[in-house]
Length: 340
Length: 213
Ligand code: B12
Ligand SMILES: [Zn+2]
Image 1 (cartoon, each protein chain N blue to C red):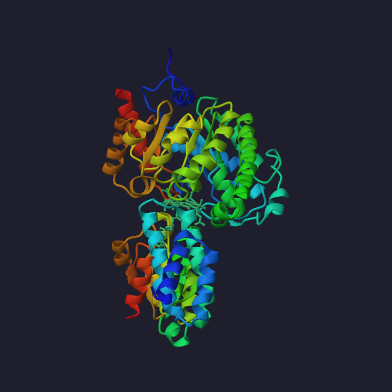
Image 2: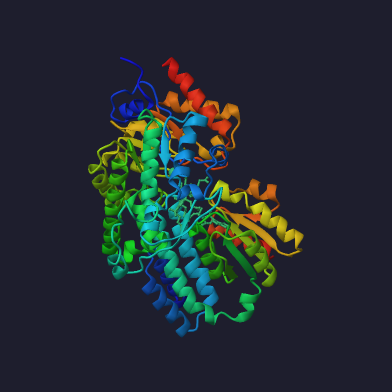
């Protein structure tokens, strides 16, 4: 049997078929200022120009050795297509949601699931995915990122109001979540059709630090499960913060990869995860952006030795992260992997 | 129990359970029977919010419950505030509060605002994603006693020193306090801030201390 391509390795790990050697794919955001310069593709333009988006994403593989290409670089694509006002951000800050269109039942009813081939930046992400697919000759995993139902619901309603609705109007929460779920299904299926090899669902607002395990299990997990059921490719689920208390529920959604924050201990996490791949969890700030060479090396080693299956940062890479630091962790990971 | 004590207890439990209707009703009753509105906030509402903060620390409740309690408190405060004698408000001082540029996490800042207001401080809320100039301009115009900056991300907290520098350059005479997940007392010291607090209740104490109260 010949060497696996990077894409095959990633997919085999997620399918639970080859779990011997970790992959160095990054299912989370990879845009950095240095890579923007190298690829001449800068934020905020690279959020809305397919060619720039694809170039910046490809640059992560080309210049750092990250074993994947991932788009987009923000969490606002779906929200914008649904009428949220977006602040474009700049070189170091991602676009963010300014105004939330859902104030009551009526305004929710007025929203329709966007057409990913047409609406706002959705087709830009799709086009970037197809470009990457072509450039990489189907050898590198192309990862499409979509925002999870709870975070999207927070974008639509405003997270503060959404959390108060838990008590004031629980039925409305379910309605917004159901609608958000439909948007996730439509957009992730579209990205698959455009050639994405795997979907990362990222739902930062669903963190235990915000809503707690009970509400996650009741409101969010079943909907993520419904989304994953519709996917043809293996999904990775990322939730920020200390998710130890919901890891079992995250796995039950059917996600094949569970991406953990640096706050979660890998060995503890492994005791909760029965058959999914563990993705993580280098500290993106203190280690990857600000840490010394030694710190990056020792943390990367620890990730592998504790049993992470996909060696990646615990959250999106921060734009100020030096390329050298990324190259560093990738090289350490590859070296150790070679000896396994 | 004296009726006064009972009112404080009810206000406290209304905040703890997040029952804003009970909080409003009780605040109205307090005014009716002539209990000092300021003491109602300090002896009833604030301790209630402290209970909720402590429970959050222990992961017994989560942010939805915090927000519900904060709302109950806020609504009671709205009723009590007009009855607080002006002098006791004025001595408490003025705070300009905001989340620094590039950062939209405002739940924590809003809690700090609520508790500071409940404690009788005058808070000017600049909102989230606030540019350096906005902090400095407002501090100047309002002749504020304190500028409070919040940052929840390591990428945004690096904007804090710029604000302190600019306040100094423009000779704005006020104290600066900071807070939010990634910042710490040592970070506060390193950038020349006058104080740091780990949570909203401590923030109120800090403000009180800095203003010599
Ligand atoms: C809720 C949340 C969100 C919500 C925010 C909703 C809102 N309106 O605020 C949403 C989903 C929108 C969000 C978005 C993002 N988030 Co977020 N988010 C969080 C989360 C889970 C909770 C924050 C919170 O509200 N805590 C509860 C409140 C009560 O606590 P607090 O804020 O600490 O405030 C208390 C004290 O700090 C203090 N305090 C606060 N301010 C001040 C000010 C003064 C003067 C004083 C004295 C005291 C004080 O008192 C407060 C009350 O007791 C944190 C995780 C965490 N551990 O904090 C991540 C977190 C902050 N987010 C993070 C990230 C990365 C993001 C995104 C970039 C995600 C992405 N990859 O795109 C975007 C950012 C967009 C932007 N440009 O800002 C990271 C930041 C990492 C880092 N080190 O930089 C965190 C730490 C998650 C993680 N572990 O990775 N997020
Ligand atoms: Zn994260």
